[in-house]
Image (cartoon, rainbow, N blue to C red):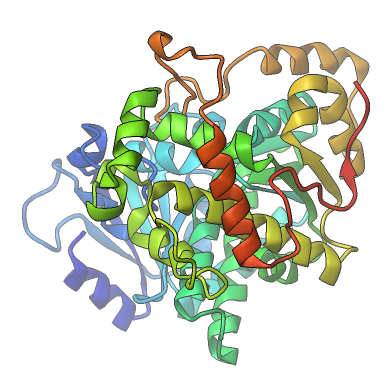
Length: 436
């Protein structure tokens, strides 16, 4: 998007509406579809004139506009530098909240972009707050590669529940807070809480306008959002929380398989020759711009002297997320977590574990809905996306890639970290663990 025109909208403190198209680089997969959302994911719609201000509409009464059109606009991203919240309207007839990744469906199908400056965001939120108040929120935090997309969709077997997989605005809260090393001024913290509260209310309003009978709204968040779970709980204090996690060998094995397109030899040669350490190969590290440096340079890991390539990145990613979950449970046990469950039980006991999770967060499900749940578990929730698990037949798809070298790395990094997570199969407190 043209930054000059966005700046104009900010200075006038007026909401503005743009006709947009998704950048061709995303549609042709030249850019990683898992990259975080930004206002610059779009170009001016080709249906408009080339003039930089054509197709821009100032919204004189944004509160009324959102109240009247909120069923068409969903929160997409936030830009703290420009101090605007971005919402998108997608092409007609698309149920984007059913997509495996909500933010991708928003990006690829956007037709209009609505920018709301922070200064007027509270008044916009106030205009729809009463209509959104009937929503009951559930936040599904996770380590990643742990069946969270599947659990999110399985919860929709209940006629009470709408499940949305990975709205990206919450991830940007982490990026902003991490850039400040979580040392936030009171003004910065208030901005964060306002964006969290406002985004959730506006998303609730959007979803309820489209499906008013499903009042329990479960947001499955991207893994990095666990680091701001406490801020999110302050913003939405009555929300229920779930943490779904996987042991380190399974997490590592699943990520490496996806990253190297199911080719063990590609993984082996890349790491053995340290190509991953010395070359910045973009398509080998999802979201590298935002997260690789954060994890490799974490204060508890910065003095680690071993090879700091992709394997180290994923070990530290798992370790830091698990430690954060541990800290949340110890510091605020009443809110973290209302349900805590492992991938192991989810994949072996499926419907039973899903029912347990739903009961723990206050969701009822009728016996006739259980068959629908079973159908969901029988499908691949990420089929057709870049994150679908896949291994080539020649690589013995059923075998793990985690061998002696990987397990030694796990132990070395965990020992160096000196945290509470002391082994690769660590089980958090209050985890639902039942005999098969």
